[in-house]
Image (cartoon, rainbow over the protein chains, first blue to last red):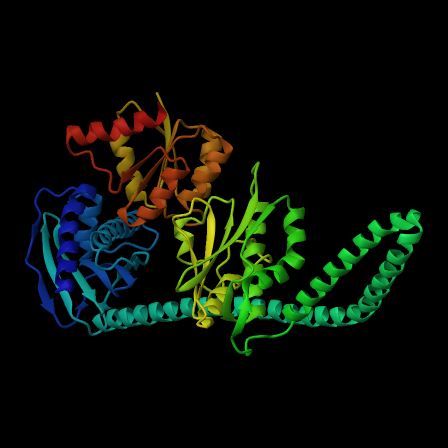
Amino acid sequence: MITDKFAEKFFDLFVATLPKMFPCKTLVRSSPQKNNRFETQNSIHAVVPFFGQAHGAYLVEMSWDTAARLISQDPEVELELPALDDELREDVVDGLAELINIVAGKAVASVSDVFSNTILLAPQIHIGYTRLPAVPVISCQVDTPHGVLHCHFYMDNMKTTLSSAYDTVVKSLEDECRKLEQANAVLHDTQKTMLSQEKLVALGQMAAGVGHEINNPLAVISGQSKRMKKIIGNELSEEKDNHELALPLETINRNIARIVKIIQGLRSFSRDSAGDPLVATNIKECLDDTLGFSAGFIKEAGIDLKVKVADDLIVNGRAVQISQVLLNLLNNARDALSEIEADEKWIKVEAVQNEQSITIHVIDSGKGIPKDIQVSILNPFFTTKEQGKGTGLGLSISADILKSHGGSLSIDEASPNTCFVLKFPRMSL
Amino acid sequence: MPKLIIVDDSRTIRKLLKKIIEGSDFEVVGEGSDGNEAIALFKELGPDLVLSDLTMPNKSGQDAMKEILDYDPNARVIIISSLSDKNIIDNCLKLGAKGYIEKPPVVETDEEREAFFTQLRSAIS
């Protein structure tokens, strides 16, 4: 059916274009007819093959007499086929090539909705006998005052079907390639993340080692410091001038206590706690462990830290994991605030409890997370940080940790600031 | 009288165009059959307008037009081509062609003749 439409278009365009290039007073076209094969002894054949989504050719044939009269517009023209370099012969070849090229171009454009990717080859002019492959041909006859012309259209349906099948295969391959590219990108990201995780593990092991090595000399310093305090305390009662030593010693002791706390945090952070059982865990202690080595960075970034967490909030959990989540959220908040210009920058950590749950809010003075990002922010590998600064796993791991505690990690959409909500089920006593 | 050159590898089209333009207020001062000839003719004759085909041997009409416009940014080129070159035509119009005339050029009626020459005149105005 499509072949018939295609052929009809070609014949219509041919009879419309021909008189514009080579004037004919009258032009009569017959109805299209189907033939099983094409063969002609007519002298002149102009052919434009096409291929792509459809394979076939447009063809016009006529006797030399007709062609010569038509092109020269001279009824008295020499009717013998002239030599190769004859001007009339060159005119006939050029004129017919241009005519069929224009018609075929319009015909292909007119069916571009069906065969959008069809390419025309350059027109060819044959002189002599022509026989096409054994394919069905649709033909019509055009009577002109200069003689009879025959227009033919053939489409190689087998090649067209093959071409269509080829297109389908190529499309399917392209789809598969795209999927593979996506999978490859995910693998690449995973590999990067694993490298980064490996680095973190190594760092953790190093931290544990450093913590262990520092702990022993620290114990000695701490012991000696306490001893000194004791000695000075005794002497103070007798020699009041020595009381100037008491204040620096107090400072030393306070800082030793701080170093001990940081080392404790490092040591507990650096061990894998995923397999630990859930036990009664104090939220405030977890937060203190975290702040032991993150409060300094927050302060250095010019951010005010406000903590409002009661000392008696107990959840059924793994302290290291809870500290890990808090550290991740605090680091994220610090990074986000460091990137913005604001007169006032703060991070608040607040915890409340009711009969069912204990909820921790980690809020920063940022303007919240855009709605379109909220959907993906807890997904693995999602990050808005610049390349190399974030793995896109922190929040996803944090959400998993909360889930393993029977709780949840979410974003408070109602908050005017950026607010993450950690919800733990209340521990049954 | 504005001068123009006609560039087309088909002598049939060149003849048709010459016949249409003869006796009008335009003068055909040169004819070429490929892009290289178009450039050479433009540099030699400095016409007011170039009527050029797109698909030609040796150098395409699009490439020739680019070189002509590089040589003289005020050059005026009108593309004469068949519909099958639609994408190239669009591209040429973006690159600076002043218009497009579909092949075969037709001036059978007064309206068609007027439309043809209006396009030529507006290209050089």
